[in-house]
Image (cartoon, rainbow, N blue to C red; front, top):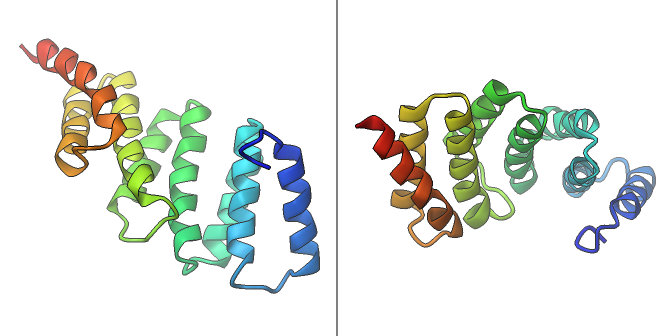
Length: 159
């Protein structure tokens, strides 16, 4: 449903599951995360942040749901233009050893997005370090190609 852009249907399905199985500790964290993601894609960022807070406070040991919720939290603050907070949350995600649902994509995305936010904040040296780390840690990631012209620009600004 989410891939088809049917976020309202995702919310309905998640709410139905949560009503039917409120104590399913194995699945509820993931359902809440899916719910938060649907809210994020509807640009209902404050509601998404609240939902992520439920995942993190009630199910801190939920494995992939906990890890991915941290990445989504950073994206929410980035979308809200709370740039300082988004850097904090991206760094928290990157510094965590928690697994996530698609770490192969989320980790390089977090480095790239954090670098871009740092650049927007005028913190060019930190942005350069973060984007350079992307290339070192994930040399085959799509984000490396997106970062290359930004890195060149930031290096040119250093001179």
